[in-house]
Length: 371
Image (cartoon, rainbow, N blue to C red):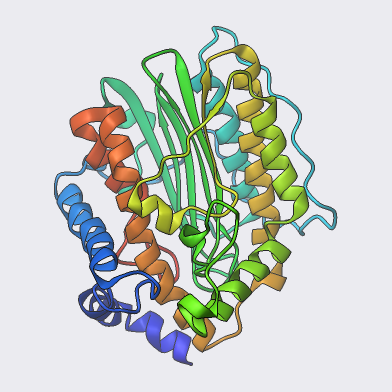
């Protein structure tokens, strides 16, 4: 009942959260008031500015059909009982264009997701297909935006490709589950290198940014009783999602990349949003690296889909869902702020528009971000 009421009233409730919660002490409680307020207000204000000048979506057509996405099946595919295996290496496509390879692999992953989640709806007014003629940095760009208000509960899914430059898949889950958000992105750099980010992002605050060089987290002597809450959140994520198998998959991916350099620097907003297993590496553009990255991104999408289809990750009705919604709303604003400087660096003046479009409708994430 509470959930249904909040969904119907989300246009009234959410502005209250934005007006009162964003700068309040409930954003990320261990952070200082100054740091927390700066992080959240910066993301929200910059997002609104970017949205005001964002690349306009094409006029809706009678029956928009995303490119190469099959018609959804009648019922969701049952989750696999066994852990998801690491995908076989993907051979680079003829012509040697890495983004063409990544885009094809990402499109295959999206087709599999769409076939498994029948209520994953294409958002015409928030998407651009090839016929829209939109270019970012002079390169043709497409954005396939979707959400799913049903049990799988996807608040926003953005399949973005910028020819010759970037392939990115971002999935923000809705508050009905605790399935991690997915971030999978590869950007081509000007020095014949490419940068990969892969992350399964936890849905509860674990004070991950407070981890010291020895791998320890602050205890009750620093955080009081909250230390036990954050420790419990970390333990639950490790048990359900950040398992030794998943950790091994990510570490072995990095180890198999030729000449890869781990990017250890993170901006303030990344510290608030990165998961404990986040992979950030830059590597030379080689056929082997392209194949390894494509396979790793496909495997990461398979892990996410398996979790999304398992009902064991559903929240109980009532307070857990409402609390998840409040946390996710502020979290997504920080994700936008974390991404913005990277897109500004990669795409110049158009970076803000692309960042706003890919981040999706931050003001409506309760059940289906674009609904």
